[in-house]
Length: 226
Ligand SMILES: Nc1ncnc2c1ncn2[C@@H]1O[C@H](COP(=O)(O)OP(=O)(O)OP(=O)(O)O)[C@@H](O)[C@H]1O
Ligand SMILES: [Mg+2]
Image (cartoon, rainbow, N blue to C red; front, side, top):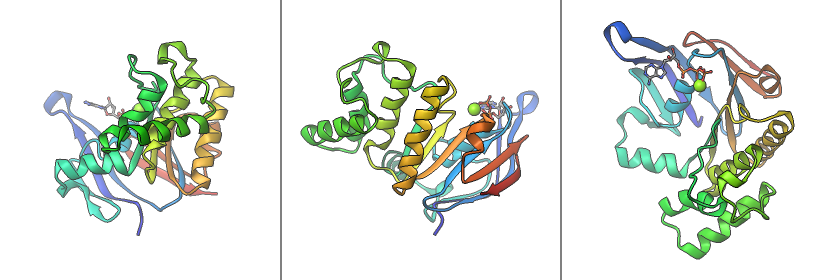
């Protein structure tokens, strides 16, 4: 069974004068363990696609199945469960909580999962060690470099052991060296079985992915596999 199956998805924002058709009939199937890049110009619909795939928003029309479940028909409770257990999110702006240490930031999704404190601490520390931040557990985001903050965000995304990682321009605010490091970590996670979907408008990053889906004006214009 595919992990994600989008069938003729349309997403319209607003109405009347401010109506925007962000996605126009997108059909896409993502299999378990794939590494997919979604590329396209600014405003083409990439982030909209990602919020739908991540069950953060719902389509205006069409059907979306996540692991066979019809997302449009799920309860808010089940959607929250899918988002917190099955999907790890990474964003361009890191989105760490400023008042929490690296360790506490990574622990957060585990709290939502209902995990006891000592186990949580151990898993969070281990996730930070895997991204080479074992020596930054008690640092606050403001005391870390952009590359380090993004690695904390990756640790947070994978701590709860989700099956899918959705990354929206994860290297958008990073220099070349830090981008390469983030990509290396994502490839490594993929080689250990995680399905990774990365949104980018950086062609050199898209070129490295096993599969590249290109969108333009809310439509898929190409879908190539290496
Ligand atoms: N919440 C919203 N309300 C109204 N229009 C929106 C909303 N979010 C996105 N849009 C519009 O939908 C279209 C697609 O936006 P989206 O954010 O998906 O693009 P993108 O490909 O991620 O762009 P970028 O590369 O700049 O991040 C754009 O025209 C945008 O203005
Ligand atoms: Mg975007």
